Amino acid sequence: MSINDWKNDKCVKNWFELLGNQRTIENYSHDFPNFLAYVYENTPYKSPTEIIQSRIENLTSQDMVKRRFWEQTVVKYKNSLEQKNLRMATVHGKLRTVMSFFSKNGVKLLFSRGE
Image (tube, rainbow, N blue to C red; front, side, top):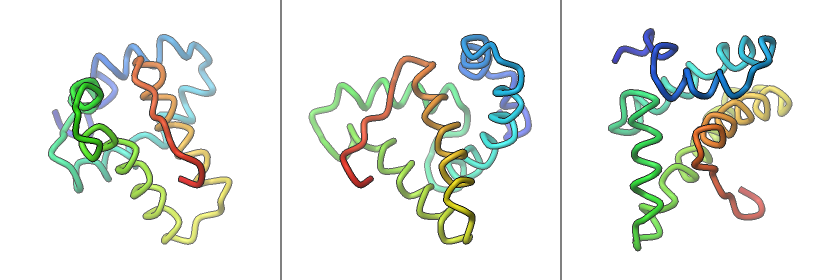
């Protein structure tokens, strides 16, 4: 799947159906491709469905590094956004989009304090 086809992905369709609010969908549609681009460049995963499937698999791992792979990836994504000197409100908005994607697909990310 190319980065431009992400809206046709089954996990994205499920996410947007559960959101319901058109304005929220528009906002998330603007921010989510940034996260996907980061994931495509920094991980082996190439579609939103692959991201969710890997999260499900990682949650059953006894290896804590593997289990927390997506939390660590999101922290690194946040750090990359902060290095671009974006306002904190902008960074938080982009992270809210990512958190919503995982949450609405039933695999919430769990962060420790300060992450």
